[in-house]
Length: 72
Picture 1: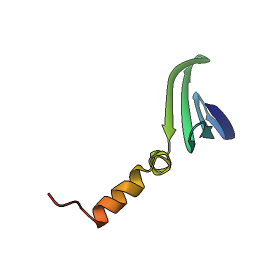
Picture 2: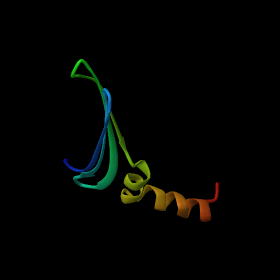
Picture 3: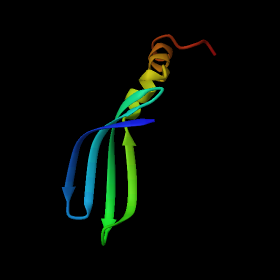
Picture 4: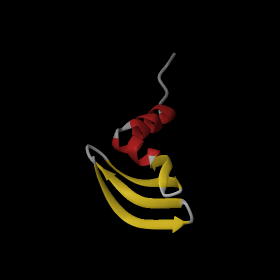
């Protein structure tokens, strides 16, 4: 997995990074780092789930199913 960094924002002990996750699938992402005394306390990664689900074909299949539901 490669991470292409676009922008980095810092406010006190919080650092936010806008980036793209690049591997089998490509997706925009936002990482949030919380520091305390210069040490990492919390790391949260927020990939764009709609982009990933679209690339996997999940959302397209869901849309097709909603338009043409299978008979029960």
